[in-house]
Image 1 (cartoon, helix red, strand yellow):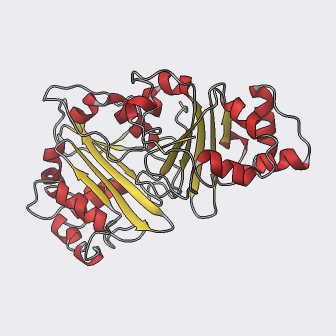
Image 2 (cartoon, rainbow, N blue to C red; image 1 turned 90 degrees about the vertical axis):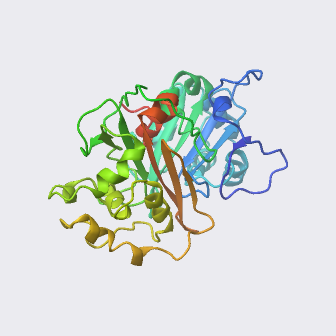
Image 3 (cartoon, helix red, strand yellow; image 1 turned 45 degrees about the vertical axis):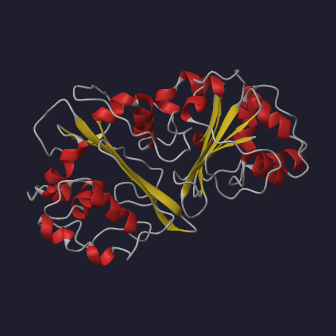
Length: 366
């Protein structure tokens, strides 16, 4: 097993821990090709991205399940293989022992066994197994979670869907193209119009545990787009909007407007304020009311922690801002990314897969 970047809840390992770059994740390096399967846990991890990414040395998803089918201690075996606890994944192996279930010989047999014996909170559509990937969604009675097994053939073939899911090194790259760059999201986004139409746009991806827009953290409604703007222009446009329609924007847009202070033309201070907010669903009391900008921002100072927690991370660049806001030892982090066309055009696979991550729990959906 190789662990990629920071991870949470992991026991000591006798094998070396290796940080792997995005290029190696997608097989674009010049190292000798080694077949592998990626595992990702999208949950309350200690990682700034709230996910754990590891690799196992199997060539197929079926091969990994066959290798552990007769494990004497499934929970311990899974923890050793996958870098820590995976919520109720051991249930399939426990049932295999209790019922003396035959080892699956094909993807179809494994799919049938998973649908019958893998514990999930939901219906069988939350277990999706194909030739190259398994995606599972459930919940732990506190939050929704998902986990994924993806073979390297799928990872190499579909970076526009999987690059962010398989990326676990903070921060995302920050270089950006010059004016005139072109990017198409390729996925539905929610539009907030602050400027006349233009060739550029700002995208907002807020990944949180609870929002009035989603209610459950994996019932996703998608990212936002502010067309006609670059990221350096966003703050002034947000604070300059006092029309009656602002309180009907998506929740994240209203919160972002409240975070910008009067007179600020840079979005970075607003994102620093977000990193200082406490709780897992922070919002000013008047966020749903048609308040002028100065009034809604006036509620923010009382909500800010006196200092930003040491665990919280911010990376504030011209064409992308990134915040991993530390909540507490239970929820870990949430994340907020703002980036514009110039960054997205330079990193199209990361950009499209991040937008997809905010729209579908299953990266293979649609």
